[in-house]
Amino acid sequence: MPTLPWSTIGTPGTPEVQCMASRLEVKSLRNAPGFLLSSLALWWQARRSPGVLGVALKAEMFKGVFWTYSAWDDKAAIYSYARTEPHRSTVARKRKVMRDATFVFFTAPADDMRLSWDEIGRRIDAQRDSTAPTSSPA
Image (cartoon, rainbow, N blue to C red):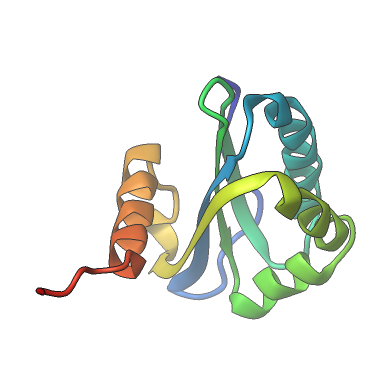
């Protein structure tokens, strides 16, 4: 299970930072190695992107699940990264092999932007629960 732990890159200029966490699941375990390689390339891209403050990546290869977490100066920096190559074309290509994707955006205190994977998992689970279809009484 390769994990690239939190790496602080920039210094926040405001008391709060914009954070983004994701949980990405591939359809088949045979897609996991290629997805990991692409994830590593995007991790490197994020580290060099304007406005990034920190990044982390966790790959649960035998489950086909990938987690990302990053902190940024603002949402504009996140969206700029997402529109820039290679992120833009990689996401378009990898959609074909994905079973599920959950993204969570939130703010955090600048001096507490480093979160545990447990906390990231809780935030993603809460997002998934809030968007799950509900059944209505018959």
